[in-house]
Image 1 (tube, rainbow, N blue to C red):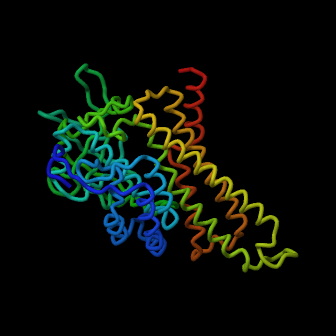
Image 2: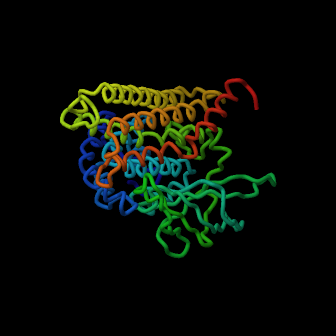
Image 3: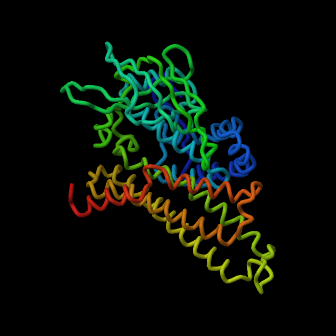
Length: 398
């Protein structure tokens, strides 16, 4: 990486397919450590280092500073592939990718400071506007706790949300960045992630204790919602995306990949796995299993088409500088929600075909089932909310 945001680094950026091949090469390693990740409730250090070495943390880093600046579809497909090995690690990667992208929405001064600090340019956090804020010269002193910061265990920067009073005297939500380290003026985190699914994401709580966040290291959420970013590099498409379009979409790929893995595991064993209480000898001969896995495969493919297609649609709109209507903006969240519901339904078909033994502690299917369930319950993917917002926009009501 360069020392300043203005210096340009010339690198050989891999193609979409080359990036996917890098992800596929990591799946056996992720699969090997998946049970351990679930147990220790965080990604394994050696796996994170392997992902770093493969370059996959560069997905949202601009090319001008040595990153890949990959299209959104590449993000989604990489995370889905890694999800075949470990949904938790995949989730941590793509959430960190989105948070890192926000860093490069900052103005020139903010980007220069982040780059000059060095490190791996990994960010994590939660943008819920909480905490205590004191205005000071040049920014704010911020204290508080922000739970559910996926990837914070291996992050160099913490993203946090808080409320300020803006220049017009009105409340304004802000997203700020603080370095992670534990020293004075730095963010820390505490171990609070005790859940049933996606246990290994390390989605712990960010803690700030009177940490100074300068105004140049902060973004206004209202501006982001309208696709207004403070970066001077207008040709970088990913940073034009309105807040909320990607937030739900990045919560789905890990579940898609995990469901692929579950389907593979059950289908491979079906020809030899004996079945009880039936006239059939093995699962592969049973119409119920055939129908269940066929249904699961179709649902999974529809979910992939929908999510990856939406990622292409959003990228193309940004590339063509096409303004997004309210109906279009909310549709991205609705499509992500539907994709997650399809993955969940496919997973239920798979578990029914696999039968009760799939819930044994040593069976990876029970972990995968928990992970998919947890992903589909993310706040951005709740059907009643996502579909309602899109329905209102389609009808044209406030």
